Amino acid sequence: MLLGLLRACHPGPTLAVTALVTALAVGSGQNLVGCLFVAAAVLTGQLSVGWSNDAVDAGRDRALGRTEKPAVSGLITTRALWVGAGLALAACVPLSLLSGLAAGGFHLLGVAAAWSYNLGLKATVLSWVPYVIGFGQFPAFVSLGLPGEPWPAWWSVLAGALLGVGAHLANVLPDIDGDLKTGVHGLPQRLGPRRTRVLTAVFLVAAVAVLWWPAVVVAFGLALAPRYVRRPDAPLLSAIAVAALAVVLLLVRGTG
Image (cartoon, rainbow, N blue to C red):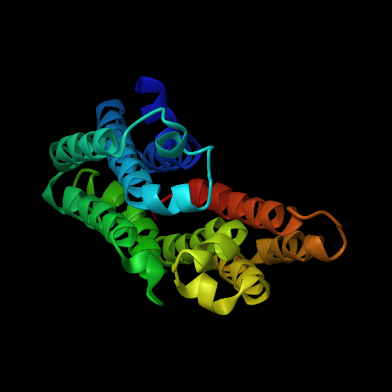
């Protein structure tokens, strides 16, 4: 069961988001204890989101024959995923509030938004909204946890929100056909692969522009790379590269 939990928590995104927000806290001047609080809160929040996502999607994943999913291959039961998600969420609440009431409130708002995505918003035209809230709140969570509870700079929140929408579009892009077969009609599925690819680049390049406009030239170059690289995963790799550039700029600039 432990292996099933590890594989079902979406380890790549979970660790990436935890590392990103913790690094943002370090760069913003948070002390060691505060950074540990941030890391623990984000990790438990992401675990709850990952496990609940696989629990909700277990039926769809079976219908699509996605044997790489632990709940489909038999490594873990749906019930165990729900228990794990519930326990992680219960731990996330006090861990978030250790950074302060305001900071913790923003983080819990982001976690709630992610759960709303799993529980139904992902299949609607508003599928992008939880990502705006989820990524946009991270600068506020970090900044308000500092001494004096300073508000984050507007550009850090905007960049986080733009990065969130780009991440949503890029994440869904490879699964659009399967999603449509199982009745998921979120924004990317309604747009179709071609328009989703274009909008992914637009939002990620916009995030780079908000953080440091001279870097837009590099972002555009990365976004246009799939036109000249003939491989199926080129659009996804391009999106990851632009997103990585935005993340680096966000870490360099901090929360303002």
